[in-house]
Amino acid sequence: MRLPDGPDLGLLLIRTDYSSQDAWHRALDAATAIYPGDDWRNGALLTPVEAPELSALTPNEIVRLAREGYLSAVAVADEQSMRDGTILFLDLNEFGGEVGRTFRAIPREIEPITANLSLANMDFSDFADNADADGIFRGF
Picture 1 (cartoon, rainbow, N blue to C red):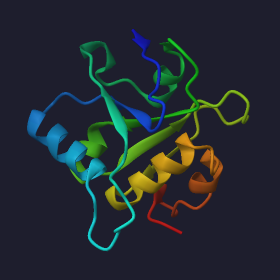
Picture 2 (cartoon, one colour; picture 1 turned 30 degrees about the vertical axis):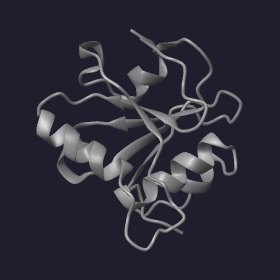
Picture 3 (cartoon, rainbow, N blue to C red; picture 1 turned 90 degrees about the vertical axis):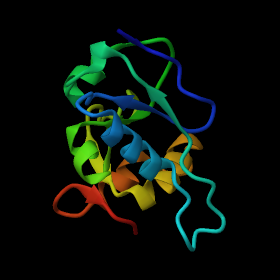
């Protein structure tokens, strides 16, 4: 499996859990929703990547996948995403020295993370370093 080029803006959302189409659609809808009170937001720009070969891949296995182009980070919809709506973010930036580092984010925070990472406004570590003790980023 070869990961496609990332979008100009936004991130790839790699689906690794195929246990339920309904759960996938709920997770995707939550990740791309526009939340009340966020008038300036447009919803996360995520490009879904679905392929049976991606089923049950771990972050370490995703890091080792071939890529069509350079990707600095990806979002992952895994088994936990299907249960609680959090999305896993995976650092692929070979220049940052933390390839393979992860954190999760609640749905409401996915849009600003995606926007800031794709524009290089903020670094992966800005979010990962501010995740709670359980590894979930809930905002600054």
